[in-house]
Image (cartoon, rainbow, N blue to C red; front, side, top):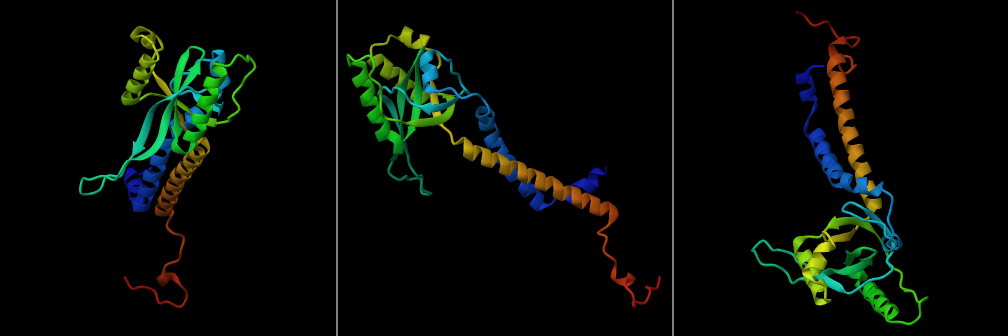
Length: 230
């Protein structure tokens, strides 16, 4: 294989396919690795199943404590100013068998999570041992390490609830469940693979054509044309 000939086969459109396909794979592969893992439900976490960074979560939230942080987004303009902040979600404290884990909730689901939180406190203060929450909030996502700003608010909330610094430290690294659409991730992954394969196919066809020619007859070889004089 001639390296120089191979380079000549890689043109602008091939580079574009490789760049776009590579970006899609770079962004989707980490999530695909999570998607193939066995899912852990919120019932599993209450029963003692350990979750760590990179775990896959899927199921209905059983109990929810108060929100301990909120998130807002804004648009930065070209002149340096920015638009007004817009609420984009909240972080809720979810109980597990060994402590707590955060849950990042989208703004559209905040009212539902607030209702589930109210039901949780009603059950925990109820004398009925069979009482259960009725609000259903389905979540699928992956476990990530909390960003430092959110983790700070998480620790402050626990301190307000009476936890000591030593107790909070014993809970381990603060983790949060981030919503993830694994279906969309699979689509992006498949598109990335297709674009990469298409780029490789184009290069292979061009390389082969350079070695064997296009297979089309030249004009001077067509019937009725006089031979070209040397």
